[in-house]
Image (cartoon, rainbow, N blue to C red; front, side, top):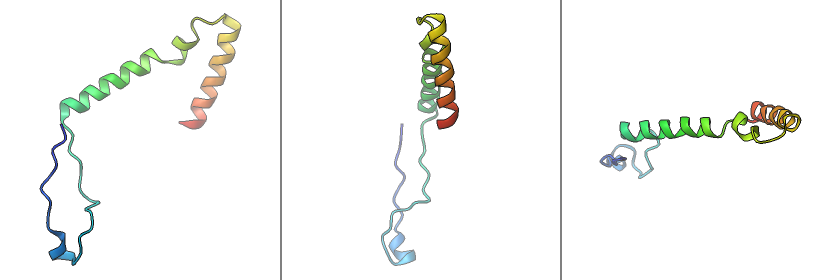
Length: 75
């Protein structure tokens, strides 16, 4: 769970009220772990192999080849 930090009065130090870009966001370790597990699961379920599995072999090869090409370019 995200817990906001206490705001510091920057106006005394710098003479203005700018948003603190250097502040770090703290994320609950359990929430981070949950997101990591869900992400790994989605990668497994929606892999290229599982997407092309129901297609005929010749079409599966072409689709797999094209998807691999695009994932290499855009990731």
